Amino acid sequence: MSKERIANISRKTGETDISVMLNLDGSGKAEVNTGIGFFDHMLISFAKHGRFDLKLNCEGDLYVDSHHTIEDVGIVLGKAIKDALGDKAGIKRYASFIMPMDETLILSAVDLSGRPYLNYDLKLTTPRVGYFDTEMTKEFFYAVSYAGEMNLHLKQLDGVNNHHIIEAAFKAFANALKTAVSFDESLRGEILSTKGTL
Image: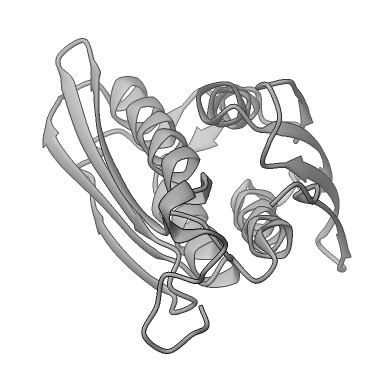
């Protein structure tokens, strides 16, 4: 269990050029540049509240729109989470967290099952927050959940401010993931599955 859980992933397409370093056992340090200020803020918050170290750089075709950048960052971040976890021996696997942020309340639940699924229920009512297209919130979490091969639920329990709803979702996910990737000492290095693999 002392093995470093660090992943370095690069992905280059005709639309984006992304590099990511993720340390699941970090201290919340983040260096992020996607060209979208609000998205950078969300990813930095994810790292800070999950206590992950994250270095992420993306050069995307923002002259088109934000879609490729946000979705592709989700793909690469999901892959980094999966790779850093390795065989998942000894981890808690499951976790949930309810994040309050002013009038907003968001539930995130995670199962690092190896089976991708997103259940998304956020009610966003404005097209943009800064230069971040709000409809891309779902696409980001879809990409993370499928590339990371995790079961991810995001449910809005309350809230009206779109900035608060999106930020609370990122922070709730970070806190749930932080617990799910942590070690359960009672497992003594076993994999928490009757199948013997995740």
